[in-house]
Image (cartoon, rainbow, N blue to C red; front, side):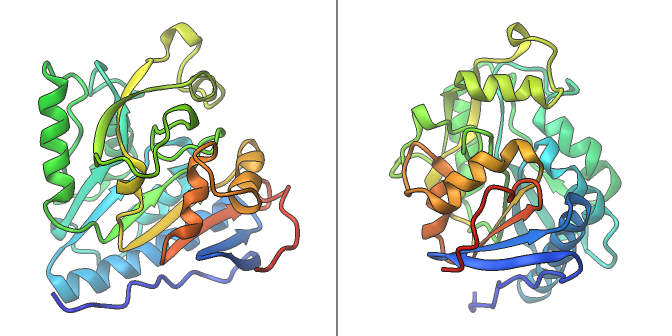
Length: 272
C-alpha cells in the first residue's frame, strides 16, 4: 500500500502548552474533558482518512478509566464507517470472565463498541483453557497486518499495557504474552475503583509487549488526572529506562502524549 500521512491534527481549545521531548509530542489541555474531545476528533479524522485510502483501519485500544472521555466522544463522531474498523485491545486479566464488569474487553464493549454497530472487535479470550494457544492466536491477529492507530494509556508506575517496570523488556522478541502484575499496578486498580480489595485483583494478565506497543503507525497516549503526575514527570523528564516503561515513547516516531493540567502538573517548562 502507498504511504500516507498519519500525522494527527489536535484541537486547540483548552490547549495550555505543546512541546517535544526527543520524538514525543506532548500536548497539555486545561482538563480531561477537552483532552478527550481533542483526542476523539483527531483519531476520528485519522480513521476516516485511513479507511478512504486503504479500505479499512486497524486499531488497538486501551481499557482504563483514563480513556472514558475519549471513548465517549469517539462514539459520537459522525461519518465513520465502523464496519471497516478492525479493533484489538492492549491487555486483559488472565483466567477472568470475559463478561465481568472489570474485564477489559467488556469495558470497551460497554463504552464504545456497543454504540457503533458493525465494528469488528477481536477480544482477548481471558478464560482460554490453553494460554499458550491464546498467545499464539492473538499474536497472529495483531501481526497479520500493521496497526494503523495505537491508543495507549500510562499507569501510575509508568507502565504501558500491563508491562510493569519489574517485567519490562524494551527488546522483547514477543508481541503478546502472559505477564505478572506488580504491587503498584494492583493497588492502582483499587484506586481506580475497579476492585474493592487487593485480594480481588488478578495477579497475571495477557498483554502486548513494549515493542508491540511501539508498532502503531500513529501512537497516541491519553493520560489525564493528578494520579498520573509523577509518572508523566518520569516519562517526559527522566531517563529512557525500563524502570519507566512508557519513557520509551520518546524514541517513537509519530508518537503523541495528551495530558491535562493535573497529570502535567509536575512538568517544568522544558520545550525540547
